Amino acid sequence: MLSTKWVHAKWLMLIYAVMLVLMIGLEKRTLNMPAMSEEIFGPPHDMVVPQAAKQPTEHEIDNNREMQSVAVNSKPETMAPTAASNTEKQTNTGIPTWKERLASVKSAVDLMEMDKTVPMLHDDLASFHSVEVMATGYYAGYESTGKNPGDREYGVTYSGVKVKRGIYSTIAADPKIFPIGTRLYIPGYGYAVVADTGSAIKGKKIDLYFDTKSAVYREWGMKKVKIYVIKWGDGKLTQQMVNELNDMVTITGDRSA
Image (cartoon, rainbow, N blue to C red; front, side):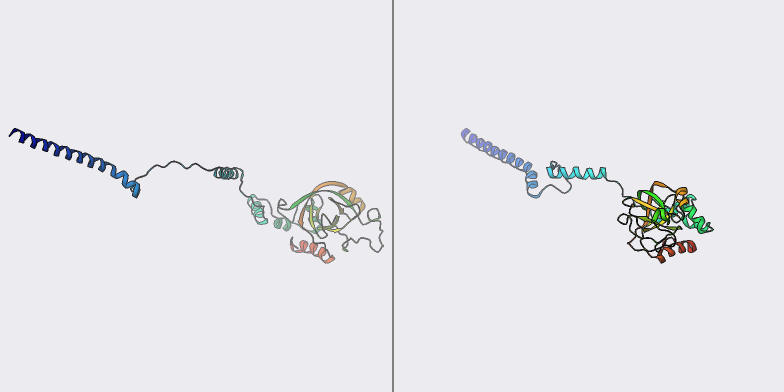
C-alpha cells in the first residue's frame, strides 16, 4: 500500500516539474516577442528610435566649406544711381534739380558760365564713365592750326563742322579714345562734343576750343582734369547736330538732344 502511494506522489512531482518547465519557457518567449515584432514590422509610429549620426563624406565637407565661404564673402548687390533716383534725392534734400537750375538761367552766356562749375544739364555725374586726361586749349588762328582768316579750311574741324564755343563746344580728341560725336562734361570748361583731331592729340589728351588766343591763356592753359562721358559718339557729326544740341538746350532745356 505504501509503495503505491509513493508511485502516485512521484508521478505528481514529475507532472509539476514538467508544467513548471513549460511555464518558464512560455514566459521567456513572451518577453522576447516585442523585440521579434520590431525586427519584422519596425517600431511603433509613436516611438522615436535614435539613430547614429551619418558621417559626412569628404566631398560633402568641401561643399559645405565652399558654401560658407560664399556666404561670408558675398555682399548685397548695389545698383548704379539712376537719373530718377538722383532727382528724387536732390528734391528731398532741397538741392535744385537740373530743370530748376535751367529755369533760372536768363541767357546762353549765363548757362555757359554756370556750366564751368556745375553740370547744369545733369543732377549727378557719378553714374557716368569718367577719365582723367591732360587738357590743353586752342583757337582757330595760325598758332594753333597753321591757318589764317580767309583760308579755305579756316575754323573747320576734322568732322567738317565749324568750331564753336557754346553750351556744347567743339573740342579735339583722339578718336581711338573718344570717337567723333562723343559728348563730354569737362569741369572748368563745360559741355563739349568731339568734332576735331590733332597730330599732337593722342591717347588721353584733349584740346579745348576757345574763340581767341587770349582766352586760351586766360581761362585754361594746360590742366589735368577728370572728364565725364555723357554719351559715346559713333564717329559721325554734322553741323545740324551741333546746332540742334545748342539750340534745343537753349530754347527748350532738352538735355537729351
